[in-house]
Image 1 (cartoon, helix red, strand yellow):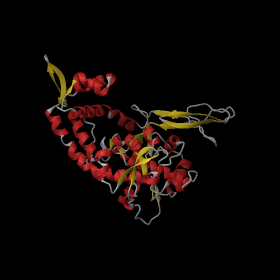
Image 2 (cartoon, rainbow, N blue to C red):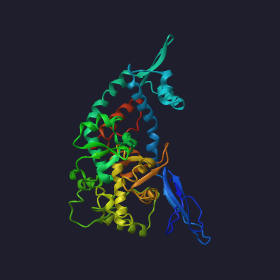
Image 3 (cartoon, rainbow, N blue to C red):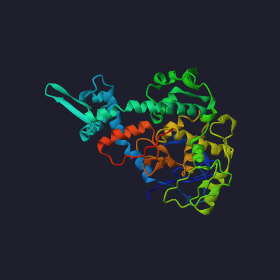
Image 4 (cartoon, rainbow, N blue to C red):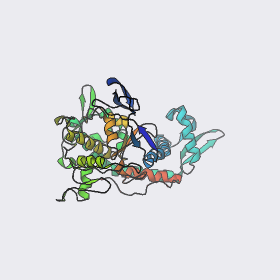
Length: 397
């Protein structure tokens, strides 16, 4: 088991991240993984600081590795489909993706002749287009988008219900539109179709999306829906502790600790105490709670859990989560909150950006349940001959 060691030296006022102990005094904020963490030091009397180990989960790191080539393939597919004649002149590829990325796409074109066909030569400039088989499967995307629409509307309403004042700047939503599965022109193609749910208003010079009607039936988290399916919320028995330290109760979260993590008895007792503690719903207005309250702190975990649950692949980059900082009333030390609850969330630095993954959504490197759009993408990527595509046929409702 590979380990990434993160030194988190606790004091009454702060933590040290990858640093040595010194006399307690504030230092400037440091940006780690796109999140700002206030660094503090304290004296240890010459003793070596005790390090807390953050264990890597190779399967979840692999999730980010597995998406690299598919993302290039799907992007090139979209570029070709956006062209008037359904083909792209190779000389125009640089205009679409830039000089550096052009060579990555050229490699993709050469490696996957089952998807991309290059024609031309002599007096005709070379061009790339989809093969007949790829084009046939690509036509199924429209049906997947139709199936996605009610899911998108529901999740967008829930996202607004999570936020303070049931309102979010459009530019903030645009930051995660791909992760939600929204079309790039959702402001024109989706929002106007549902005036009874959404309206766009100018707030302090920013276009914001506002929820028109609150729906109590939607104010149920993914965690609560799972508990209902498992019969936990309808059970009158006391919360029971499982052998792995999890708790089977109405206020508990699923914990997935890495194989190398060996918590001691005191640690498990604290976790079980935390799991039993009740907390306010993430759908209640965050202005009503003080973050110093332990119940409000647990509510923050529930908010992050629900935010990730609303995305297609149950993950967001650290920067994307941080963009919702004020709208969701997230704590200042958000990174430390995520690290503390490493049984629920996993932070990987694989890929271009630091990414937060909801652990319970994955079985190894495979997403357990997929929405129609992800199932379509898997079918298209299967043309490459990849054997690591998850065969799960479940869909998000």
